[in-house]
Every structure is written in structure tokens, then in C-alpha cells.
Length: 233
Image (cartoon, rainbow, N blue to C red; front, side):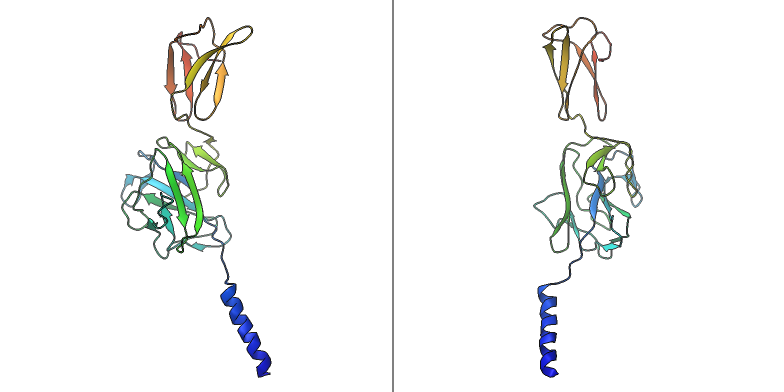
């Protein structure tokens, strides 16, 4: 019996060493706001600050104490999440990116001009990341559905709660470019911005060359009015 037991013990020991159990980290970066001008107030310091929302879409709690958040993919250990921090199943956690470096307050801010954001395990394994561009004040960016792959913008940020359905796909980041095009029966204008290209037919006469425009900027649209005050169709 001793001869048969020893190989079994050795096999079990080797199996544990060679094939360690792995727990899949089910945490995602779910939403963030990089330009908070008073919309959301940090309850700890009673002031507005950038924030990052983490979400656990899984069926069980996850201990993220010792994990790292960073705004630089080349610096995986920029800020460590405090030990004992966990997210319950289907719940959210808000972390304030305000450079205070205490509690759930990181040692960095988010840049509204665009940058990187990632979360790593304590051993440096990437859990989730996003690289984002220019952000508008008080417009958050997040997953269309909690834990989903598609990222959208929210006019009504929801830190610490499920994302809502008031979304849009992009932000007009620069003054659009205009030109006059000629078709068979009429002239039309097209304008381009970093998100998409659109054309419309103006009312009345419109000739090629230098034109007078007025542009009214919104958070997520640019609406063009012709010099006669009429809106494009």
C-alpha cells in the first residue's frame, strides 16, 4: 500500500504546482468622467473631481485590493488600490482621480484632452483598458450597457450606478470643414468633422467661394446656420 500511495501523493503535489488554479478577474472599467466642472461632487472632500467607475458584472464578489490603476500604459503600477477593497456581484465602485493619493483617491488626474486608462492585477496582468480622445465637460464616457464592449458618451453620467440609455456616439472636436459642391440641379454644402461627414442643401442662392457662416457649438453636435439666418435642411 505504501508503494502505491507515494506516487499518488507526488502526482497530486506536482499537479498543484504545475497547474495552479486561476480565478478570472471579472472587473471592467465601466464609465469615467475626465472633465467634472461641478456636476458630481466627491463626498469625501465636497468638491468636483475626475472619477473612474469600476463594475463587477460577475456572479460573485471580487477582491481588487492590491490591483493597480494607471493613466499610462507604460506605468503599470502607478496607483495601487487599497487592500481590502472589493466589489460585490453586479455592483459598482467609484474611484476619484484627483491626485490626493489617499483612500479611494488616485495619485493622478484624468486628462480631458485624451489619454490612457487601465487596471492591472497585483502581479501586473492587464484586466481592462481604454485609450480615449478629447472629452467635453460633464459628459462621461462609458459602456453602452454595463460591462458591454461598445463605448458611448453620456449626457447624464451615473457614477456608482447602472449606465442609462441617454447616449450618443461621438463628439465634434473641431470646427467642421466646409466646401460647396455642384450637383445636377442644385448646389449643396458638405461639412466634415472627426466623427462623420454630412451634406445638406441650403435654401436660396449659394455661390462658390468665400461664404458667411455662423456655427453654434453644442457638446455633441455642431449646427450650421447660413448667413441669412436659416438652418440647413
